[in-house]
Length: 399
Image 1 (cartoon, rainbow, N blue to C red):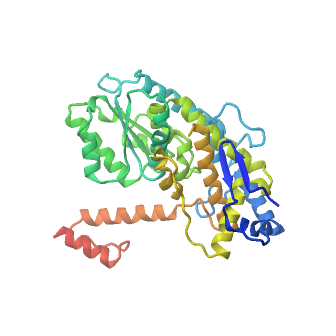
Image 2: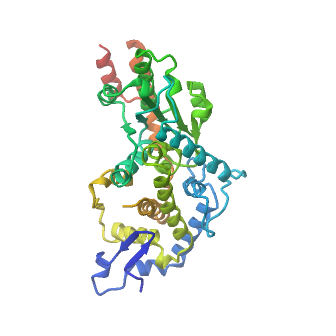
Image 3: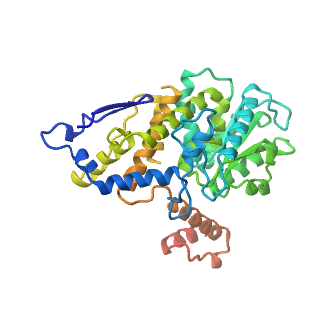
């Protein structure tokens, strides 16, 4: 019989409230663990995941967020691989170097050594990003900020293209002392780039000669950021194998590092790596992500329970819930990594790819088609990418 309560690096799993522990019948999770095919499948999934195999089949990529976490530490658990080479070249050294570049840049912003193009230290950071490019660093600041001594530096997150949200933010700030962090894995997210253009215009209108000198980009495609006008030394890279939902573990969290300090974010990384090590080596019967995934599978497929309730025990964690759909630092890191692995294992059990983002890519292509139609002459507004209802709405807007 499995233990109903387990602890890993501050993450406490209590399964005794699950119904299978409260009825005099064989534990269905134990029964699932007796299936050799299932155990073999989970074992192969773990081996492929840590072996940099291209388990994101739809995009032909490995899943590199564990490597991004590990690369951020100077001392790494022996049970985790020391390299990540999805295409034959080890990316771990480059990831480590980007972590260090991020630390140095964040610390200079935090201490005031970093100067804007106006020659002044920063008082405010506007973080532009959507989805994981926004929710990760925002969560860190909300969750850890109240218990960590911060500088006077303020962070403002604008995760959508709502003009009122950005306008109300800009109205309160001094453009000569504001830094813009532009976080976009593809560096092609329409909403994020549109907001960046608005920020540039805002600075130029205030008499700042070189507005783009006040931008820092975080992307998997530095060449696109350079083409947009950001200097190479102000571009932070992460690999395309790191899905946006996992970008909290890398340079995207530069805003959190600047506000909270490097020690806090490094502690957060340690918690995530502790869960990596646990998932990699713990037996199935004691493996938190596997036990949670099997419990989810039983509740979903056998008991037909289609919903899952997640409650934040502290108001500082209110941003954790939206992030899971998509306290000390180590405990928070372990908790988030546990949920990542829980979803991954459940997907592996159901033969679903948990890493692709076709919906995001489709949304971007539809947005581009809609934008082109809105900007075209009425007669040319038809687009094969848009359905009849969307085209009718666009035509009514153009009248």
